[in-house]
Image (cartoon, rainbow, N blue to C red; front, side, top):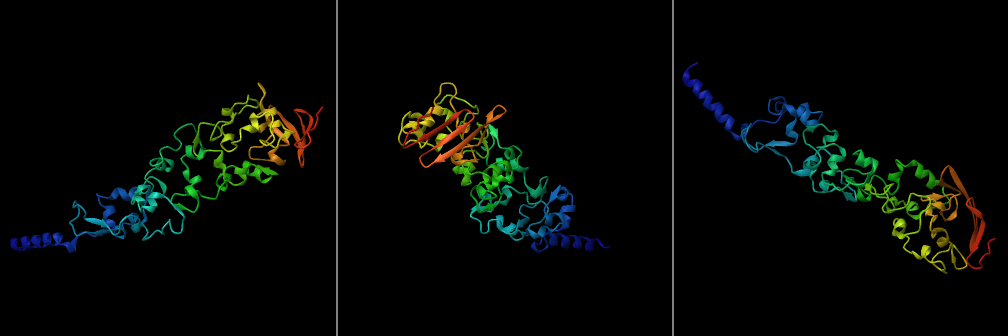
Amino acid sequence: MKPGISVLSGVIALLFLMSPFSSAVADDSCVTSNCHAAIAKQKYVHGPAAVGDCGVCHVSAGAVHPGASGAFQLKLSGGRLCEQCHDSPASGKANVHTPVADGDCLACHDPHGGTNQFLLIFEGGILCQGCHSEIGSTGRVHGPVRAGRCDYCHVPHASNEPALLKADGNKVCFGCHNGIRGIIESSVSQHKPVAEGRCWDCHRTHNSEFRPLLRGYYPREFYVPYEEENFALCFECHTNRGTFQYQRTSEATGFRNGDQNLHYLHVNKPVKGRVCRNCHGIHGADQEKLILSRVPGFGNWKIPVRFLPTPTGATCLAGCHKPKSYDRVRPVANP
């Protein structure tokens, strides 16, 4: 070959490479080259990247590649690009996760590949705590939070339920707490928050300093002296403290013999003050007024209680005392 022809061929080749019409096309050579080969070797790889179909997301900007800044740009910005293949997860949903609403899919996902399923940039709960750092950081931690399985209760993109919950009300909780569901479904009377599916009225959903994830203090002992702080949890809803503080009342409670307050009688004892669960089921009970027919917690013995209501009072046959009756209208003289 003559030297002049060789030089001319080199010049033509250089001009061709510099031409905006000849920029490198994104294809499988990207992921098989020394530059981007690592992408296809990840544990989880985005479909287009796995087959070298880079042009699905990227388009040449006309700059020479490799090394040129902005040589390949995204075809669309943010979530609009992802929705060219993936249906919008927010469509028709009442509550949308902020990154999804902002079209910032990359806040959680790597667009090419990674070590985590669904191309998440971090594993499970570690990813969520990048934004929600306050969750599960102190006290006693809910099992799914401790395990980094936020998806047990929440959906990551959008939901028609508040807080991106997977289901309505206590249906989320019943997915794990079958025993509580059984108690509720077989109960004659139910605690109002439970009946209305609001477990979080009494429990914190992520972490708490009180067992079992209670919103406030409630004694675990069977007997405690009456003090307001011992019933902080109950007083969040039952604000009428006169129920337990007035020895005589005509309206603070229906559990009275004439005007003798029988709640006060049971609770206000210097040593063996009764706590609510001495008579009542926390979630539900097999008798009216949340009264249990068998009360657990006194060693191996479940104390029997039979509650026989009347229009203005009741009779109580319990293992802890002789049968006693009360009547709000006509006080009963018990032996």
